[in-house]
Length: 556
Image (cartoon, rainbow, N blue to C red; front, top):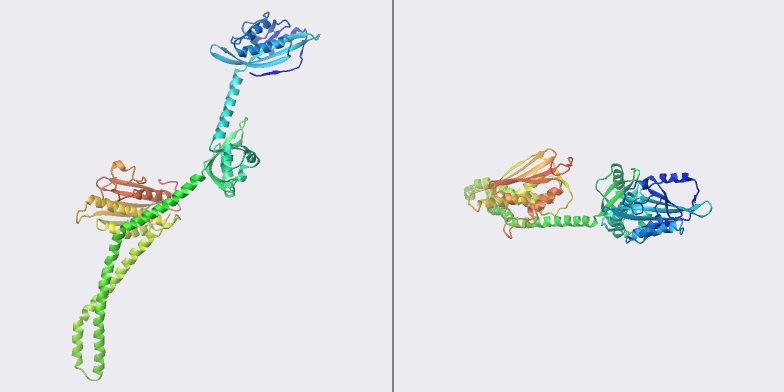
């Protein structure tokens, strides 16, 4: 209910033509004379369909004064209040009153605006009163919707965790939600005095402007990130989207910017990446530790024949020394005419088997050199795998990485499988982290060896087959690691890349191997998939993008 009074004093003359003005007035309007009797009604009043107690059944000649007196005693407080207001105007107590009230009929409620205005007669006496009842149901519904929307907007923006701002096209901050103060430490008065753009990190401003321009032009910007200055002088990371806002004329003149604080998320991602790197390196060291027995055996074999050959060379050198000493003695004696000593030298040469030494010493030396080369290869491969590396992506020769993997993992596959390689000699390098990629290949080769060993069950003399291949596939480099193991059962194929999932017995596997493989490959911009036939084996397929290709995802 609302009301107002007005001391304006419109005058009423005897010109009956003024009554015609009633018909031009909107709503149901009546002219009530100084006796409280309805003198005239307009067309809207005469045609009223019912539902308003201040109009229904009243026509010229009816006592509006008595009717309002009855309604003033109504149990309906709204109707009683309106009736009292009209009576005050009819009795000359006030010149004008305006009230709004509801009226229910047939289960529906409609709203009306009542205006009662007293007119002054020509002689200064009290004149008639014009009473109008205008249906404002549609207006009230619209105002209700507006109030509800305003309340909803206020409740949403004041309680939203996201930062909500409305910016004019020139960058002025028209509105900033309270979440700005909670997140950035600025109060509402401070936010009203600054442009949001002034708080954006300088290096992010061009992108911020461009995305706001896109949002204003197309209606919606893509998701973008920017840094914004906190009151404490530190920057917070935001993820945002800009949405165009139309004015009542349908023109886009402002931007709704919805931002979300992702600082904690970014820090968590960085911490997760750090922990993944640390976990990967730990797992790599664990794998190398598990391979150490085989690696020690691989180094021990060339060391054994190096030791044997060196002892042989030591003994052979002793023989050569004796023969050399004898020859020197003979030369001195021959020069002195003692030719009989030559027979003794011949016996000495025969005893030392010089012909055998001439044949075997070079062979022993070559074997020793081969052994040293083998040890150097193993040590070099171990150095490559043992280096912690980092996340920096550099060009990597994947063929070389595959060869190093076979060297390091030889103790795992040597007794259970033959290895076949089909490496593209013209394979271009791929941008990735060397340490992480070595870990990926090592995990896959060791898993292949274990799968074959599990299938063979320790059968003597039997071996499976591990195949490694590399090739160029369009804008991708494809690496395949296959085995003739037991294959991957259907029921677990969707789980094999999940962290901590393993089919190995307790103490034999952490469930991190394939999870790390998947994480590294996807982080590099590639994809990993597998093919498997139960009982026949499995093949893991890695696809990595070439630097110049820069594809949008892991699949073409």
